[in-house]
Length: 102
Image 1: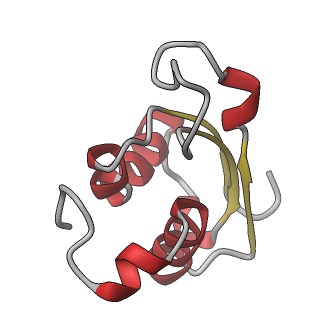
Image 2: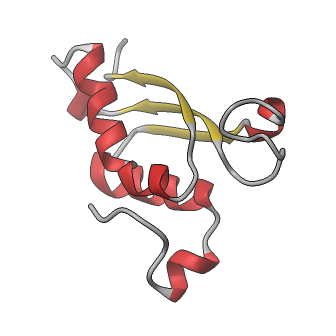
């Protein structure tokens, strides 16, 4: 997956939350996908000192692909999928990653 600033008109016009949602939907085909922009709660903190922009997110995913995977493997996968967003200003994720039935 690419990193760095957006390179297409679509990437420029989409909010980070929407790009995150789209990326995770395409890669994980989740049963549940919740993406909450929590940036305002972190205004003035590291990663969002000016209190503007999309920098902090809470993400909850329930996906069959997580079955049998450890918590660390699940987190690494999501961080890998969102690597481009870290290059665009994403600072922190609060992840709840579950397999169906968990």
